[in-house]
Length: 159
Image (tube, rainbow, N blue to C red; front, side, top):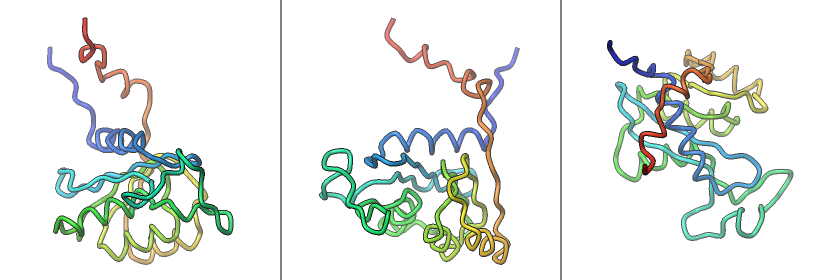
């Protein structure tokens, strides 16, 4: 009997979900995984600039209804590529939540060709227009209990 492998979309989305657990935001935990040719090239989660206070420690720094301390997961993943010299042109992203307008614009400028997301989150109409105009594929990934149950977490725990 052969082992059933988790599909690529669910595999990469679960990577984004795992990254979201590192978030330092009180309002929403978001993770993002950048992928090219079925290889992870970067990951990010939403949180503060390295060395700054974290929202989970001191609260959000709010202005006009937004926390200005937080860098979004997509921006952190793109920045990681810039820092370490990894090209993003032709890559796709797996992100736990539909990207905001600013992240959408950044992803499009970075050459991302497909945006895979798990949950709808204030989906901006202009962001959707830009995605369509740039012919970027938009795909809502489904995770279900069958996919999660394929992972035998208990096999990694001490006996």
